[in-house]
Length: 414
Image (cartoon, rainbow, N blue to C red; front, side):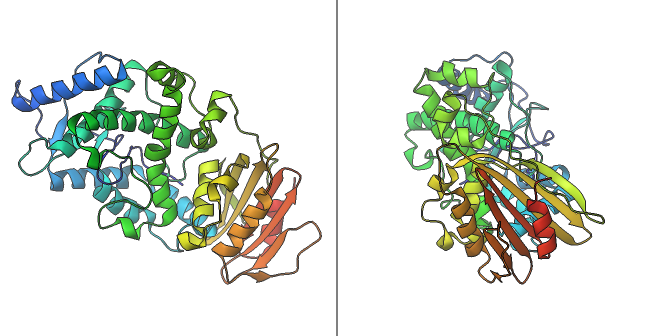
């Protein structure tokens, strides 16, 4: 799924990475507000043990102009073709209802949730403020988060932002490092202000704002992951060598979301295992997307089959820990869609096949048995799509298509 080039925050706490420089009033001369920014920047430098190489001059916007700018960025950067591919893939996996307009949903949700952003391309740093234009505790905390992004960008360099909701696994992992870094810095700074009520990283069940309840569970979890799991990852690195160990991670980025979820995998250098290639569909089908599918993506599915948290597997995180590698392929033919998902079970782990089978049954409870072949773990036909699951050794392969023939072709080994 594709996410526009920005870094977001839940509970209107934090965000960084929108495109373009918002129109607003910058500082004309040293002022009380500019001096306050300088004090916060100095505090961020002390926390991180890094120095700004050049001044950062934030732009402060009130609610209306800020929301309009963020919405424009989302709609510009989240291309319709990316949104279409995301909608097809996520609907086939039961993560969103069919016909969901992801561009509209993203625009509304981001406008509601984001309180500031830093653009690593233009170096613009923008923070939402109240009508009075002053910095309350929340605005200071947001600014500390964004200043951390600007600081690490200058001192260490930020990885490129993803341009899709369903980002690659490496992009998801990198966002965990970057947002985890800024979140930990924000929390340390916020605790110094005594603002404990708003400095705890959010979880998927506590998103604020009127649009939070309308967000599908997969998207809520994806929104929170870089901040919550990322901050745990960053603190794990700090426990092994302080901020210097975190700085070193910018030179050797985490490559899988499993490394963020389970930091010892990063510390041991455990990367992904490539699955065997998925099968292909004949014309008029065309392959619209092939990308990595990570442990975090799997976790978000297992936590809410069919978008329902009540259907969660008993231990979704434990089940996702069996992930060692994954690939997703989206095929399209006009309005029809098909998805192939190939996963690799980690050496010494068990149960990945059973977890995927349980998840699919719970995600699509109307699916009925459809004549399973000898090598198939599942063969199901539902009202909208059919699915076939095969499990051979460490290879777990799921094919989803409008009919069983397409699903079976996708799980074949070429």
